[in-house]
Amino acid sequence: MSENKPPVSSEKAVDPRRWAALAVVLIAAFMDAVDVTVVHIAIPDVQADTGASLSQIQWITGGYALAYALGLITGGRLGDLFGRKKIFLLGVAGFTLTSLVCGIAGNPEILLAGRIAQGAMAALMVPQVLSIIHVTFPKSERGKVFGVYGAVMALGTLAGPLVGALLVQWNLFDLAWRPIFLVNLPLGVAGLIAGWLLIRESKGERAQRLDGVGVVLATVGLLMLVLPLTQGRELGWPVWTYVSMAASLPVLALFVAWERRLTRRGGSPLVVLSLFSRRSFAGGQSVQLLFGLASGVFFLAWTLYLQLGLGFSPLKAGLSGMPLSAAMMAGAGLSMQVLVPRFGRRALQGGALLAVAGMLLFAVFATRYGSDIALWQTMVPLIPMGLGMGLIVAPLTDLVLSEVPHEHAGSASGLTNTTMQLGQAVGVALSSVVFFGHLGPGDPAAQAHKMPDAFSGSLWYVAAAFAAAFTLLFTLPRRAGTAPVERTTTEAEPEPQLVS
Image 1: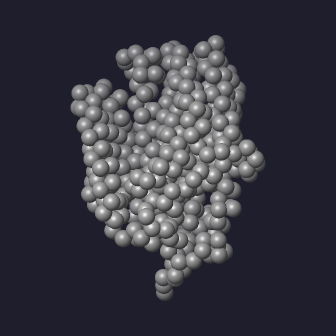
Image 2: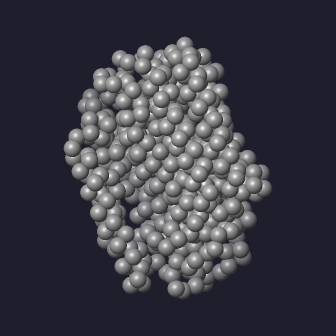
Image 3: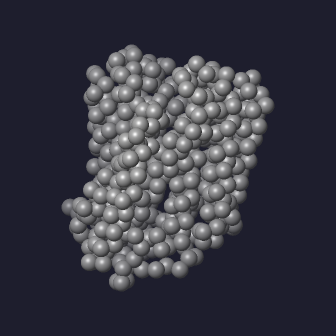
């Protein structure tokens, strides 16, 4: 039976099962990363099998991301309040169950409901991954761990389309598209059992109550901002999308005012605003936003360019992206094991410049060769881009969380993931200008001849985002944990409450 133990030093309470627990949480993170993109490849089969309308298809793809983005901050804080292991296992169980609902859905309405619920469960599960890592591993090991985390996330993000293409093509047990969801069932069940046995419980000592008013204000404000960004392009940017985005600003301002008031009264705010006084956290969130924006623009334009512009099959398109995935994994490992310990922040800035170089090279190839571009020419620029992104993503997470007290690890993790999701939503919205604006009105599938120019034009914006990230990286400390640490409250920081 579990029992609470007195607070102990984090260095003396090193969990001997921590590496096995890491494997469990990384499998969960990988499942989420795959599920974000796996459905895109299967959309034609889903539409043909379920008879879904175009609007329903848009929500099946966008509903997951929307529910995920809206719930990340709250999901992270719930872990701080009620136990990170407990909320993680709840998220894994819910994610597994909703994957089953999606896999057996007999009509688009059930599939849509399942996808939205699946995104909500991911919002409970994913923030606990970073916070469990943060409180389980001693500071001396976190760099190595975040390098592994970055490599796994890179692999999952780019494996989604490939996994989806393979499962649809294989048509396992004559189930067509359904295995893209059902494959989560054995992974989820295994994760539940292993997580229960291997992960040690932890939670913030002082956080006592969930900030209900903050949850409502944050959810409503983010919904008013992210929903138009997610659906605006497909709907033709009606007036309500602009009104909603404008109205989100006073709602989010009210949220900030409430969080400050709650902090002054000694309550437990949803977001600890004083975290932004830490240079590594504030600067890291800005870089995270730009990283998401660049990803949102690139991956949408790149997928359409390969399949509609160059006529690649889904499987060929997925395979052509493997150099990017491999380079991101290599970059993440190299940065955390070799470069960041030696060069600190400059390693991340070198990664930003590598990503810029990759995008400019791709723009030159796409402009010069048009639709006659060779397969190798679509793959070579992905190597410097992948290396650059890998050099940034893993150490950035470490730098962002390096000065965060353990008791606020879940809140900080949820906010970091939300920033990335918001950046990707803005990037997809920006694509309506920088990519679809080049194509002009009409069905993109009928404008294959314009795709190379539209794609190369988009790459300049992606390169500009990485160049801006290079500049913003100067706001980060030279090395993790070197900036002055201010207290988040007037009391001394407690150690995390551990439950064995």
